[in-house]
Length: 311
Image (tube, rainbow, N blue to C red; front, side):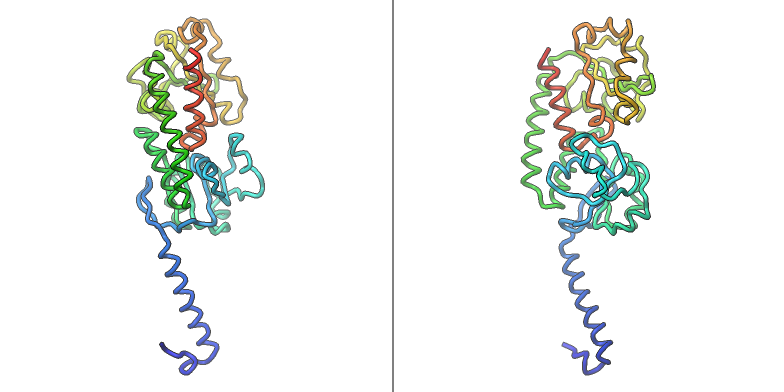
């Protein structure tokens, strides 16, 4: 080993020795990094990162369910079980769509999590700190939710907790699929600003059919993000046994009950769903804002299972 004190001035020797020590620590830290696969590719992330910014509400939901704290979140409308993240204790680092890059930089995060609405900002955020994209695949919704949960559990060393909650979710989905296959045909609509859109298999809310087992009341609906524009005449013509409704206005805080007003008409009242009291108003925040988080997913399965069981 080189003795720097005999070949360099004392002060410089201390600086070099310090740098070497820091390099050793850095190498040690990098040895603890994990290479993880996500929606945008592969990223090296630190094991059990201390300072985490979560722009994706589904991931925030899952982290909360696994008992993992985050440091920063977007300004958003949180469901009751995530209401604590509205407090000043948690740094506000932008919105669901647009990061506040100054706040993100100042936070000096160890890990940034994006997904869904924030996915488009992955490239910019990845330049600041290790970033992973947890966007759910609508064509394999439950499968990608499970992979995301397992990925976060691996990063934060929470595998046992994740396995327990995933096992419960899988059992609930399997039971719902069996009951749903015999429940009749269903149609899912989203209302906003007095208008309606219908969503079927392959759409952003298609898991109602492809994963939960509700038989579609109509085939060939548009699978664009905004669904297929429909009206009361369409609902009567389709005449579903079950009508599942997402009130977007309620989800975004623009007033609850708007969906009921839209559907309060003679045409809808003549459908089998209305006559048999089988119009189900889905939890709008869970379906529209949170989506594939552990708590939201379990609650969605439970709500539909309970509705069908009352048939």
